[in-house]
Length: 392
Ligand code: NZQ
Ligand code: ZN
Image 1 (tube, rainbow, N blue to C red):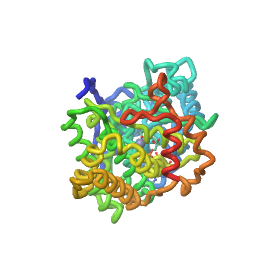
Image 2: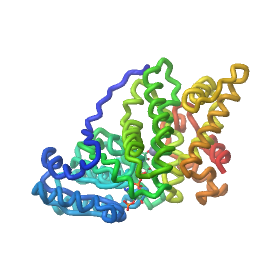
Image 3: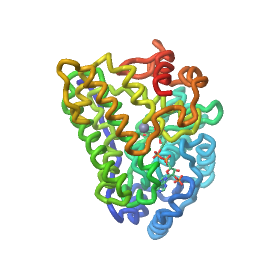
């Protein structure tokens, strides 16, 4: 195990009928002038908006609103939100929606008290010192932003999609009512299931030894996702399955399962370039990238791939030919992604071979000195291009 410093301060209020608590929770956490931030309108159709507004009004909380967050949230709207928060003296942000709305809220939260350009934080040329606190009402089980320290924003100028990890990004509370997800189309449910699976998966593929406890935590999350995904895809209003999936989404990315180990995250970095390039849904992009990443890297640690195949998908271990077991695990994961409606190839999401070199070149590097991304097997741009070739 490697040393770690773990603190996740987000309070979770979970279950049916919990959204009317929003107003009193905002008050309890010191909010008096709120920015109500949301997306393209799903919360108005589902009635979640009305419940939140009623709850804020009953608690005597004054608010202004800013809707219109797009999937793969944009920097331009973040800047609009910062301006609004400054003009109206907002002291608390309530994000009602999915990862995109929450990430946009986090960006507004750190950007409002900052004198410079908020994009500096995403370029890692500045570090946030303070923020306006953010809380969330989650409406899709997916990104885990409701309990993570990350925010991912797309800058249309150059199509850059970049992340910011910082302690200020943890929401102070998140309300998780699984019933809100009933209005989601099956495709979005599948994208969310894929994303949360990959959050546990990317932590699982580590080179750190003696991480038995967190191996088991990652495995528990991945297995619970697989079991409940099947139930949920059969009936999108199965409360118990929706509740399991919702909590899996948060636990997959609140980093408890990542303590004491160093996850990989190259697949996420590659996917962010696809989303930035072509506005593809994050989960769909991951479903294409991850099997290709596995095919490219498995020979570097066949025993870990065998463990994954056996423990997650129950693949029978071939002791004479571990490579075969590893490959069957990759196939099983690919089939799982297909079972939740995900695409298999870059072609299906409109990304062509002629674009591979540009996408690979843009990728965010973890190790600037060596010009590489990812930790399990550090990848140079040429490696990323080969992975994209395997996914075409
Ligand atoms: O905009 P609205 O109208 O709300 O529609 C949304 C959107 O079209 C819709 N939706 C959400 N809840 C719904 C609903 N439709 C009907 N009923 C509901 N209850 O679903 C669509 C997708 O929403 P989005 O917020 O984009 O989904 P998700 O939660 O998957 O977030 C994806 C974003 O999160 C980032 C991704 O890169 C992507 O930009 N990520 C954020 C992370 C983090 N902050 O920790 C980590 C992740 O790895 C990820 O990168
Ligand atoms: Zn993700």
